[in-house]
Length: 194
Image (cartoon, rainbow, N blue to C red; front, top):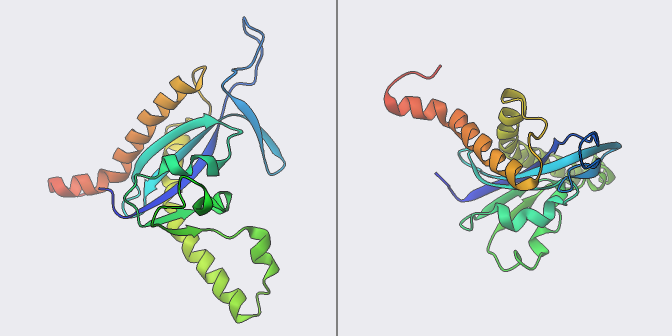
């Protein structure tokens, strides 16, 4: 199943910000973070996805204020030759736990840097095409998030604490893998996938 490439990304899962409980406090394991101009309270689901099959091989749950780059080493299975990451992981290859690995890092360029290169130049056109190719490969990581958040309606955590919610994320992403692999599994059985 696991090939030679990994795509990693993270998504925010909301938590109830209400303090109408016995302790008169929010969940201490959840934190708030800002994405753009919007504030969120909850946790982050970090996943590592096989670049070939699109199946999730690693799930890590953290508080929402945890930077994506800090979980990079935990999202790799160890045998990958290529790693595709978005701009939130810039500098991942220089981190102590990762700099010794023989990996071809494909990290998206920050939007501001790309906008600074004129579109009319040959370099600008090539950079935009390269970033487009990287984005099309990275898009596979969005499919499990779509299944968990939109099809399974898991947009808000159900329990208190990171441990219980991370355990539930493992189950949800395992079920998402079954949905992603359904067509291939049915083809092996000799039936036509619906």
